[in-house]
Image (cartoon, rainbow, N blue to C red; front, side):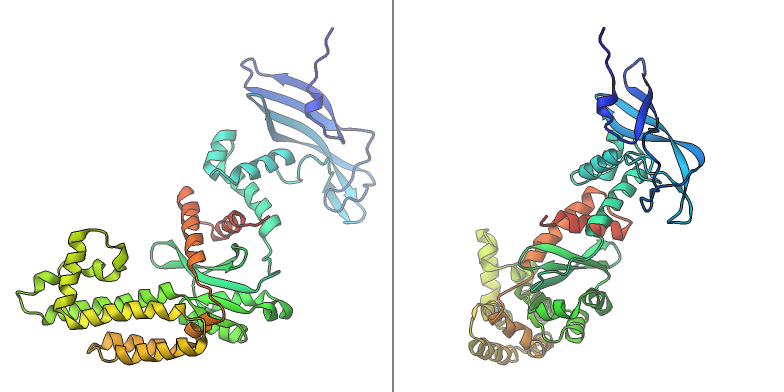
Length: 401
């Protein structure tokens, strides 16, 4: 006679199988377990052997599915007096945590699923409450990524990402060399980035050499105050983006000054002026832009300035880059528009960050790619209300482990 048993599927040492049953439909299984008398009870908190049993209790635990059946374990356990803790504790039966309603192996399975599925998908798949799934996932994330890993950081990139409507941002810090997201912080203030640097030891700060930023003054202030020896490198994309705003102001001003018969040429050119000429593929659009540039000297000049501005980042020698930057600012001041003059003043104030690119040819384009992935993570979960959980999910997604 065959003696089939479910015991091999329950390799838990400190408990014994008391009873098992399966629903008629085969979609549910119930298992009763109790402590194995061969093992002396131990404290779940410190692992010390207990002196005696204080009382008995039981707990319903969800376990991994067995085939199509959802498995529930009803386990008896003892509350014991722990001499080391000096109080009554739950005994450690090894296969579940003291305050969890799922087994350890199911919790680990949930954590693995949450790496590729949303919390809601995992909850629906296993028939659990989404809050339970999120709590389990967050517990593992805190254990693995809860402490910021500052090791082997030499070059960083910093940018912000919008997380909610209404100008709510988070600051993202990237290890430029490995592509690992090191840290996320609330807002994009100087205090936000200072908080990141405050977590570093003196040796870790000394190991930093350069950091890629956009020309956002709060970030600059944080770097100059907390790690003044680090070379700030301004990203060319954000600098050109800033000049595009000046170009648009020139376009509007020239439109207002133009004769009524010429204004038709200005219409529909806003995004043509912001785009790179090589990216304008339509013949009609290119002809339209050329007509405007031929007609208006100021707009033609700022478009030439835009191309010259990009070339500054191509120099490898600081002296040559400095000379070209000075020439650019002189040429910019020949354009009779305050917006262009103001931008030239901004470049002169931040010249150090542009010239540092010669020694450290880095930029935040890596972070732009990271930010796109972060947006996918956010959309996949229909947004995150828990910013700490969101930060941990992002750090996990870019972990090099």
